Length: 186
Image (tube, rainbow, N blue to C red):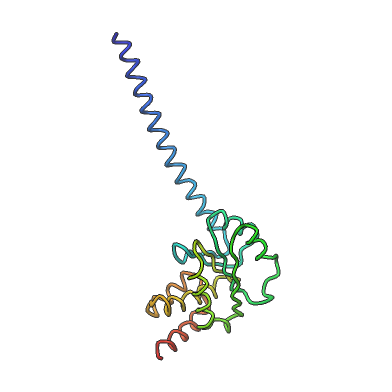
């Protein structure tokens, strides 16, 4: 009888151990998949996470568009100027993956304007879901995000510039700073 109880106890303990092991494996799998997704995004062309629903970066490749779609991106806003990129038909490739594709041509530093920042704000306001804003390197994307944060989201100039840098702005910081100053002085 003691042997029988030992077997039952053993069976119950085995069930508990197996259940606990499966629970641990389940959580470990979730963590591995999240880490894998982060690794995938890290391989993108200068990708930055600007906010929970917004990523910015440089020109995505066809392969990166597939990864973006699989990562839940619903919209792409392309800030590259007219005839600036002819590597592949990005609009066709994005739409084939179910991603809404929007173009706001920002021709170099001259295209970093209040008007284009307002167009970006409008596009972001009208589209739900995770959005990627890109140019060639992320510099123009970060610059327009900075202006948007200052004007539409009422960040102070220093915070808006920092947000822009986090979103990819580099060499356009001085130009953006001058734009923010001109708006602040009105």
